[in-house]
Image (cartoon, rainbow, N blue to C red; front, side, top):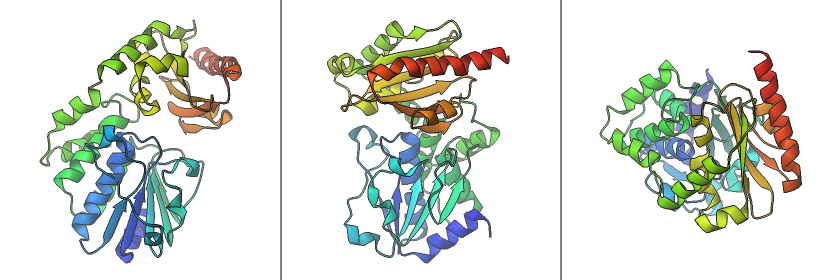
Length: 318
């Protein structure tokens, strides 16, 4: 049996299925979670299907998570989507079910679960959930809402179809999803929209971005800097792609100070592979999109020096 067949067999076996995704979610995390749930609810109406994890008001347009008691996990199948490592799983009860499945598109550095389907060449986990549906479409039902949220996840994780992981399969899947009854242009608009405080933060990022001669760039968003904008940490994710719009920038880091005075680092690249650098600083991710943690402001210079080394090596090999 293929891994997809094993997963489908487990889905058919269990009466209760609980779907988790990662902390500080993005459209792909929620889209793949809610999309899978919508497909399974339509296909198996007799089953109890739940989505759990912290709810964010800004993502209510994609769906709302369920609040369930601990005893619901007894004899349940738990599926974790779009989550590379266990500390990032939203709601730490994910390991209290009878069986655990991991479906993800990040490098499989943390191998957890009884079954794992990881394809790090896929654009998104929403793409994988759509592939899963297509493999068993004679037994599964796609709904308009499932197609809507899966499309939103693909749009989000491909950067509106401009990131390197976007393939012909990605375009084909997105095209098929748009055949369902939802407004794709409205999804694109929602994911592009920012409010005025975020626009001001975007201006700050451009005005304060440090760009080295080799193309490495970074900006530090301290608590002091962020306070006037009145934005939560999850909102800062919208400014992460901005440095990539500058032709002078090859690889960049957005360092966001946390309440405990550590810095969450969002790393992106147009060429240099930065996931090994992320691992050095307690993180990981894709070769061109990763995250890490810098423990204090005193460590920022060392991190930037390491980023310079990665970019210099890339430039030397061109």
